Image (cartoon, rainbow, N blue to C red; front, side, top):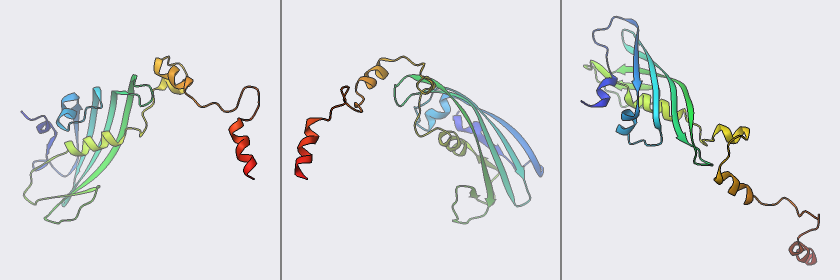
Length: 172
């Protein structure tokens, strides 16, 4: 059974109004998208489908935790994911494309929301993933110690100017 079948939302038999769906997201979900950056993802998606006579409004609320590597120290840490996204689904054969509006054929009876949930989760990640221990100074790591020794010196300890700069002053 395909993991993405769990993310098919049938809307044909539903009455107009709001309908709630709860979806669990784990490692198998991300393996399908070949996204291996998460270790032990534990996420849930609360989906609210508001059925109208001519279109659907879908609201995704993703909440949970993932374990990811730090970009600075490569140490693993738990990152909280909390994001929300909206999608409008219209019926027709238009070639109109938008991030917030999806056009599906007239005879459709269900919609697969896996791709939209995946994008909502991945876009909630920060560009630079930094371990909280680095921010507050509590993380002790060999990599951090090595980075501190490689930091450039701001000025000489005796206050003198580097002699290479003196040669440049002679040019003036």
